[in-house]
Length: 336
Image 1 (cartoon, rainbow, N blue to C red):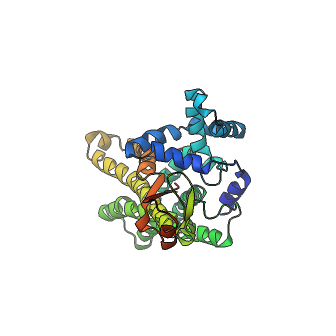
Image 2: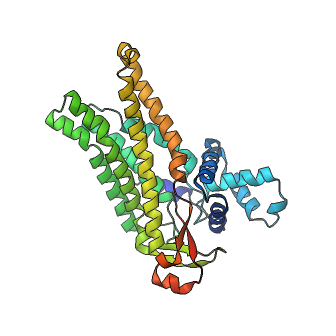
Image 3: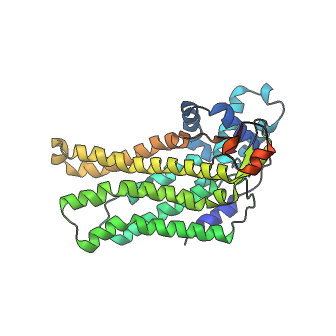
């Protein structure tokens, strides 16, 4: 069952030649502050970009790579950047599989998150939805990783094993609250509240961070490329790889943790109101809508927490990188 995501990846990857430096330089210019990044992510995450054909994506890359870009229509250049940033991997220059592009994250993940957070009556449906959500999360993390240290489209066996292990562990760990309730008959209101509303929040946040750390482990094991202010590659740094993965793990934990916590807080408040006491059936659809809204709001916020063009000082880098450059700061692609 699991290799379906890897098949999607292999089936949709094809090469476009020079996206890496373009994207990194763009984020260095346009993404230094949180609000700059948030503004751009709100635009990039527009789902309408998913309708673009491969030909349109190629044309947008051609426009951005042309030397006469400055003389082009400003609106066309802006749209070309939007399409490139939302559809092309910045390191490999490959078009991302449709379901793993940033604009697809909300429409694909929202129903999975809602179903995962439902108060299931048994372990089997909880396992099913956990498996789907964790599989998609791991696939998204891998496809949008930093790929500068390994641009081969073939996925190493070790990475496949880590992928499967990450999904399997997260799926089993995610159903522990449901399993504990069923196994020990925890049916009191206090226990229901603890295992359905409180425990899942830190648990899902931790599992989301862990998925990033495991799936993208090759980045801090092998290192990632760091570049100078002119875009020249200085070397491959494990320190930069660790920093990129750690920042992304924190942002993903913030995304899933907030999405799990906020609807619970709102629902707990509403349950005390007279309207909900008279119409309790309204509560379930309200919870689902609130979960989707919070997820939609948190996606651009979480993507903007750390710069896409990460910056690291020379003194914090590996010894061979320090010896290879005189620049005080170097840059790397953080990934998503």
